[in-house]
Image (cartoon, rainbow, N blue to C red; front, side, top):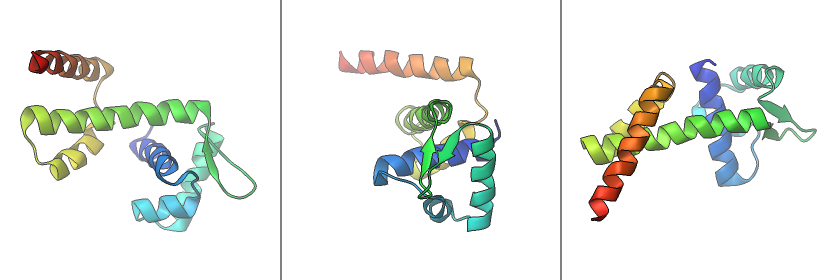
Length: 126
């Protein structure tokens, strides 16, 4: 999946958690994109089976879309935490870099970081 599509799915998920419902205009405002650009992207995500749009214009993540959005958001949160807590990067820089890294990191490397974070969390509690 393309990075931009993953960003749209992640944004829809985050907005849904914050606001309860999401429309194309909400996504456009959040990302700073034009309404036509977002409408086109929503059409692509709808065709690929990642979202549905109800009669009132609310964007609903399908199971496929929700799984992908959760996966990307988990990567984003964990990579940000790793960059801040382990490496000592400023939060704003970590957020920006995690947003780029979440799309290109391999499953193996991500799982390694995830396991490392669990391990150091345990050792820090002792």
